[in-house]
Amino acid sequence: MLQLSKKDAIVYDGDELEHIKNIILDYAWEDQKNKTITIKNKISKHTLKKQECKCVYCEQQLIWLGPQIEHIADKSKYKQYGFEPLNLVIACAYCNGSSKKHDEDTVLYEHERYEKCEFKIVHPYLDNVKEHFVYLMDGQVVYDYKKCTPKGMFTIDTFGWDSYQYLLIFQRVQDQKNKPIPIDLEKLISEISGYKRKNN
Image (cartoon, rainbow, N blue to C red; front, side, top):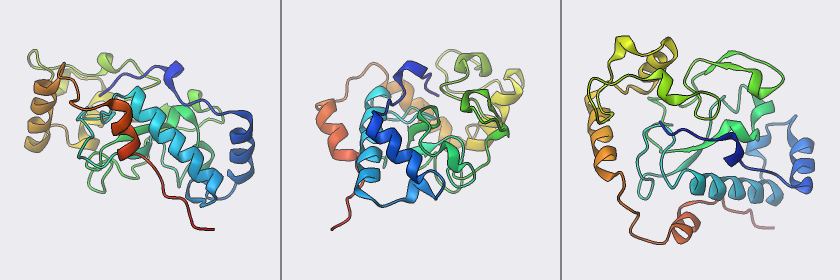
């Protein structure tokens, strides 16, 4: 799992904040106004860049893996956090798929201030990721499950990170580390991110 810094989260300008405020009581994320789509495109490009085109959870390169804006606290259950910067990351379609996290309720205790919420899974912005996971050997591939924290164990269970399929993924991630993406990052982000605007 990637460790993200709060200072790297998306920052909205005044007009964007006003627009979000006006739609937040409705199902804000699904709003199809062009202004909303523009904001979502900004989130996608910003977050992909900060995560260096990697899935926040499994760390796979997202070039061919269908990057998705992921809401750590489910956007349908917690509408008030739909555009909360610390709730927005980029995940691959597999980690965010219906058989993995998808719309799992990750919030243990809800609070009006997002940063004061407690989460069931390890949070890439709010937790020190390394504190929650222990590995059987160097290489960060196989977990020493019983030595992980309870939150770490719940995260492993939620994503199925102890499955054979994920072991192959994690091995591939380790093999890819320190290998640069073979094309221009800015161009790549522009090509794989973006919500379509509606026709007026």
